[in-house]
Structure formats: structure tokens, C-alpha cells
Image (tube, rainbow, N blue to C red; front, side, top):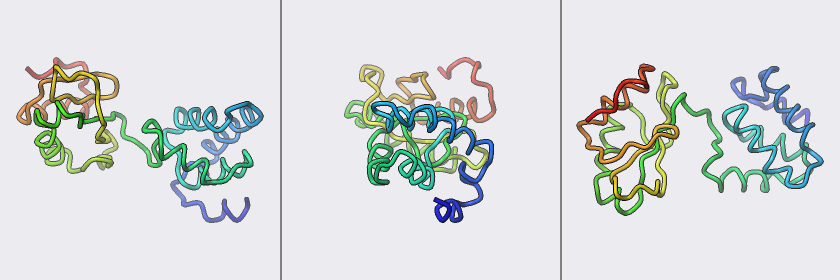
Length: 177
């Protein structure tokens, strides 16, 4: 374990004493529980914000399971992320109705406005852009979500105003018409 910790990058949560204390606390509280893998990973995702590859190795070692088991869970469930997310997560729906309704054009516009593509976070840390399979609001296609809020019938010309609200912290401003 000491060798693992010696190779942890400076920005990783394991290298930060405060975050490392949270990780250790979560592991101590849950290590003996049935389903500890999911419980620990969910708690770490919620409290730390992501589960880096070094964290995965650390958790695996502390829980006595192969790293592949932990990595398999983290890579399978879309809730988990291996890199820090922005303050807001924008998800563009790629379901059939949304795709046909214009999601590819929304992706292009989001890339232009934010300067990042799907799976990336803006330099200021305000927005992470992601794609998702289906939001379940097909009648509103194309749809995107910002955190837990759904925005439907979007057009590329309305997207910059919506995204800037979240970049600047003006989330309470009225939705673009």
C-alpha cells in the first residue's frame, strides 16, 4: 500500500489529507457490510465527487477485492466518474427521439459555447458536458438536463443563454423561451 501511495499524483484525493481522511472514514464505517463495494463507492462519489484510478486501487486493497472488481463497478454505472465534475452537469439526451430531433446540433453548439466536448469539464470548473442514453421525456425532444432539471424542445440558438446561466451562477434566471 505504501508503494501505491508513493505514486499518487499531487491533485488526487488520496494526496489531500482532508480528503484522504474522508476516504478512510468511509472505508472504516462500511468495510464489513454486505455489499460494501457499492456502499463505499456511492459514498465516495457523493462526498469526494469522483473515484480516481488511485482511489479505486486503494479501495480495492482496503476491501480485499481485486482492483478489476472496483473498476468494473465504477466503469459500468454512469453515476460514477473517475475525474472531477464541474459544479453543474449538463447531459444531452441521445435517445432516438432526441437524436432525430436535433441533439447532434446541440452537441456542436455546446462544444462551441463551452469549449469542451462530451466527457469534459470547462476550464473554470463550472460545467461538465456528458451524453446520456434517454431522459424519458421523448415528447419534449431534444432534451438536456442540467443537474436534475430537464429542458426540452431546445434549439441550438437558445443553448448559449441556458449554458451561460449555469456558468455565471445565474441559475434562477428564467428559462430561455
